[in-house]
Image 1: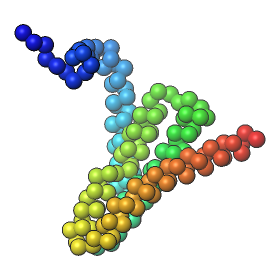
Image 2 (image 1 turned 180 degrees about the vertical axis):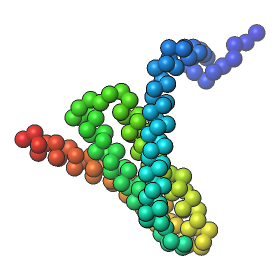
Image 3 (image 1 turned 120 degrees about the horizontal axis):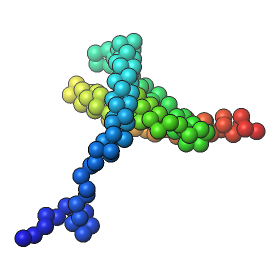
Image 4 (image 1 turned 180 degrees about the horizontal axis):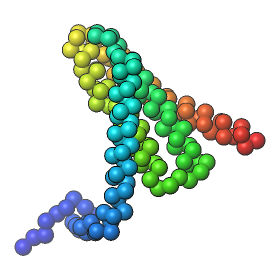
Length: 154
């Protein structure tokens, strides 16, 4: 008889999760879900306040993703370099709220819609500009947060 391979080194199986493991993870799952709902509601509110006109550039999704990335840049500096946070703050706000607020799925749907409408140059620009803006926003926000912290400490 052969032992099933698991893809892990040596074919060793991981132990089944224990009840105590679930008890420690349940609060994390709960705060991520709560934060995700909050962030998604905020994104929906942004789409109501700043609707994308038919055939228009999806500025709301673009802006939400850039702003969300900037906020996570500041947030990560604060909780890693300024003051350690409670163990549930990062999953609630970083993964939950900001994960629910920013949106890759709407970015993909908006891109597909631009291509389907025959707006190839706009679709390609949107495809390239969104990740560029998001990465730039997180980097600039983290850099600015560090500069402000350095200034306040001097």
